Length: 357
Image 1 (tube, helix red, strand yellow):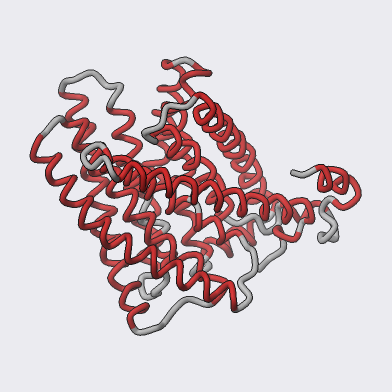
Image 2 (cartoon, rainbow, N blue to C red):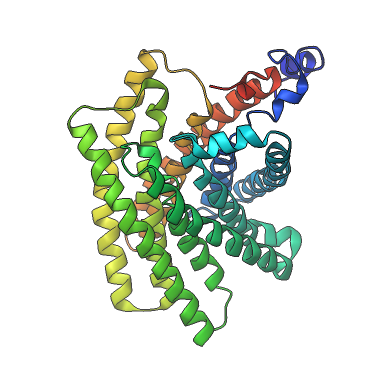
């Protein structure tokens, strides 16, 4: 917050709400996307081919913010379900808002990966692994639940947001690859990597099916409503996360043929990602000219771009030139994160962001 906002907050806090209790009344699951978007800023920085104490400190602070926000939001969301159960059930049944229940496992998984990458310096490696392992387990089980439950209910819809409940197993595969680096070689490690590949395949197969539908809609010039345009960026989340997972898992497995498959897949997915990046950018510019207003869907600008950073970094191990791409994308990620985070803070202070859409 700036000094002006801090000075105004005591008098203007929740000024758009008729009572403070309404903060919890319409707390939807897409709030967890803010933790995903914040956490990926930290995690992507930790994997960049840059070794800067300032960058590392920045990433650690951002991870701390994401972890703290995860605890606070989990408590608030639980209170929402207890105090406003009818609203909560209504949002579960909503054909669009319900899709964002996929953000909950991804928030857990993102913070968990950051705990190993950055939190270990503060907590110690043993505590970091226990916390990360717990978050990975809960996040993976919750992600499988969203895959098996939500898409079946709304499969007829043709929205990019349908990817939200399908991507969590891919995030589990990436987080599992990070965890596997701390598992001693042997049967347990091999079986764990095999599980991660199963999660990778589950997410990729279902995600590819949805992606075909979404692209078909775009080809026929059927785009989401203006306020839903940011969700187009979610398509990049599956692309970037799958490239990251494929190459990290191959590195953990130490297999030349898996490495070659990871590289080949990364190149193909990367080309598709470039096309989708261009399409998403053009649609976003058009939407901005048509009166796109800030909402929590703007967090779709962050996590997907962050996965492109980690994907480019993973491929950069083989193709060094891609490290420059990763750094450039990271700069774009931080800029997007700063803008969206500022809008969220302003909406939180006024209370407007807690009003039903």
